[in-house]
Image (cartoon, rainbow, N blue to C red; front, side, top):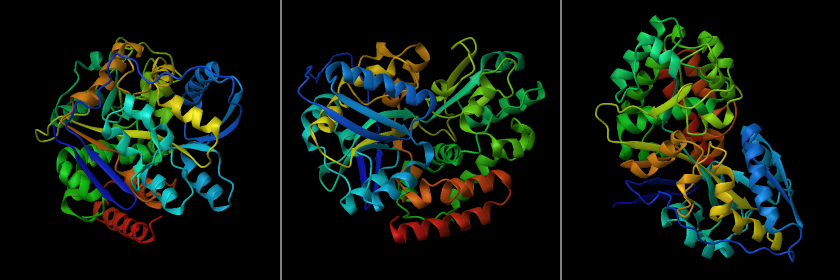
Length: 435
């Protein structure tokens, strides 16, 4: 087993060819019921819609143990980095938040805005491997708990559309793009692209780059040790253009893809008849669908294809629980979130994966979810989402930086060199300012 942890300022990258991210079936770290703790907790989160509802189930499970604590969860969505940063600057942050960007967490640590959660160390050590604890460790102290993880290297498809076109789930990129042409010829656009949410585009690029350039260059680009004008980025963008370069490949064409949000991109594939056959996104896809479809017969998934015989690789995302204040109510909630019971409360609903090794995989609601969650353990390389590790102004701000520039690339995928130059300028500025 080989673990590689790379740190630079606000950045944490984990590339792990490992089985340490697997869940096991035993339990540990249960929190005993107590009515001695009381109070209220304000909690700003990125989870909206079905995900917010699922987290509500976690809160209910917590309240069975701590009935006198009220957790007031506010779904903020993708604007959370801006909303919380503004609140911190104004001296009025929420008590807690979940943040998808390790770089932003590190910025808050550097500012002294976050409280360490070292009181949870015993619970975390009992339930998580060191690699997962490292994701929330900054300046040698535990500041965060990666509560919800996701396998961002999955591809979801409409089963009837694949059958009608006579294609099967591919293992290689060459077969993947060939299948897309066959599906288009059958009368269904192959791809549903949620371009209105720029992070879906960065996820596609990162999965391509991880496989095509390899984990070592992935780490260097993440750390801005190589420039976005590098030839490896050129190659990855040209490969990405094989998906988005033909307007007829996408539901609604290019203009429709730019205006399609992530949940709609999923529904396009879930519908019967489908508006598109494939949506490229993480294991959380079924959790955001509002159109009913049955796993196995209505929809299914396969791992992101290998490119040029690349080894099995998985990009993960993770939502890190942090605390801006410290009191008994907050401490009790943080500790609870580190237990198998907290993970199971969401995992049973789907669209969720966890590094909690004591949550039984039998909790997952179907074989598809068990497969996507289990793939994290089977991959030779596991890398944390690249954009989430960048300074927030570059990697996690709506309409600017990577999110905005990849939307520009979606509009004009032939403009590779210009997009690279703009990405490099934005990255250099963000890394210089550290914001």
